Amino acid sequence: MATILKKDLPSEASDTLKNIENGPPYPYKTDGTIFRNRENLLPIKTSGYYAEFTVETLKIGSRGTKRIIRGSGGETYYTDDHYKTFKEIK
Image (cartoon, rainbow, N blue to C red; front, side, top):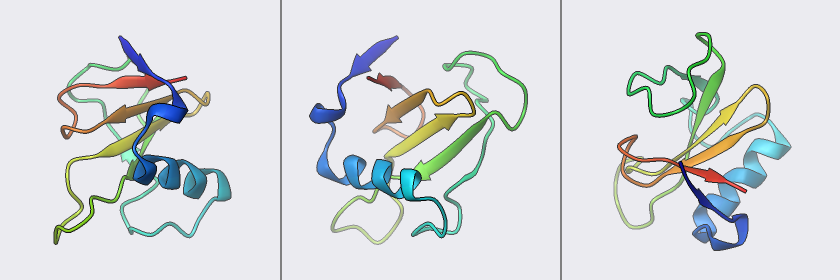
């Protein structure tokens, strides 16, 4: 799997990581909900292992396509194309 360094993330993704670290409440009601990994692009884990968080997309009227996925073990992934591809954040 491809990787991306935290320092190379868009600033909005860095903001999302800070929100995750600070804990709830989150900006979007769907943040922190279960990510089911239906695409099987992340390592296979039990249901409920992954949570998803919105990366705000500026100047659009929806949540956009960018997300951060956090595993229960702390591993973190970024997608900017709504789950088509992932990069592990290092």
